[in-house]
Image 1 (tube, one colour):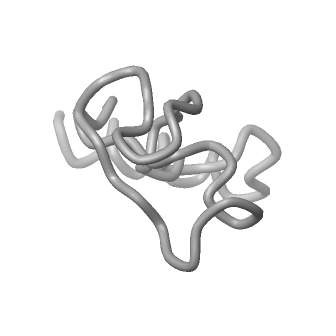
Image 2: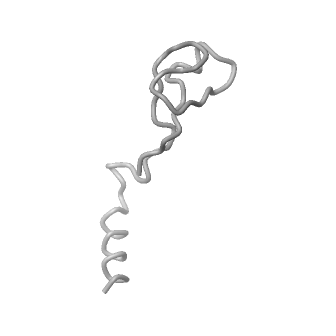
Length: 60
């Protein structure tokens, strides 16, 4: 799921705190923004197979 809220991509070096925006550019420094939501699970998730198997079993 993709979030509509974005954070300045270089906030750690330019700003004192994270700067959030809804657009593609930071409102304070005009730098690029990136998606602020973390991925739900990593691609190298060791338990992904078991979670998917449990989800299929619950839906049947």
